[in-house]
Image 1 (cartoon, rainbow, N blue to C red):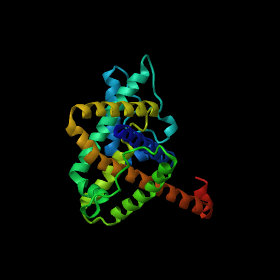
Image 2 (cartoon, rainbow, N blue to C red):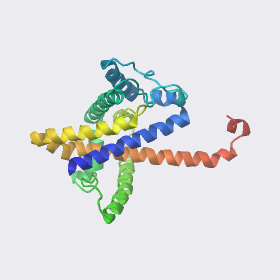
Image 3 (cartoon, helix red, strand yellow):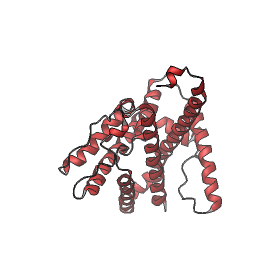
Image 4 (cartoon, rainbow, N blue to C red):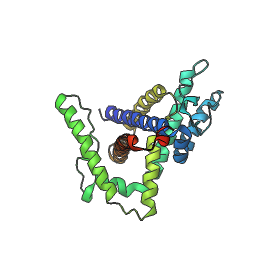
Length: 260
């Protein structure tokens, strides 16, 4: 059951990342967003391109997408025989490299922040993600309420950090861009979600054979997953707030600015 729930959270994280990325690119342009996320852009696009090149296919587009996202050749760029399986291989490499980059960032820069979100005052509470899916009506509403509680805890945790410490700002930035670009957000989302399911099945098989892997999943991995999901919730909320403020201020802008 726990690996099915883990797959559910991973899919939600990937969908949220795709949504945030594509919304930002529509507002700011693909090139701007890719440059702002340069470390994650390089990891994700290089891994995806490697998957295509390994199978003798061309790497669509460049590492940095065009300013106009409609010209981005990477979107749904499946061509040739077995093109979808090539896309799955490329998505698998991109997802694995994204996970490794996020894990390394957390290990070296943000272990304390993750623990302060999950283990306030050093005591385990109910902040970590639920390990069972909301299969009943009451559980579904508790699931929705949990999102608000988690978002509040995340905002409180962020506010308590020592922002004069360069490690804090660097970790928040890197974890944010690697969370948004955990999957190949410029490419076929269908292949990405199928790969996520396959990856969870492989992880479950390995955990069944190696008990230490199961302990890692229920502990460290679950804590990092909680932080990533809370971070994406925060980015989604901030994006909606800024969009609403911009919509309210738009009628009061000078005419020559609104015409652009």
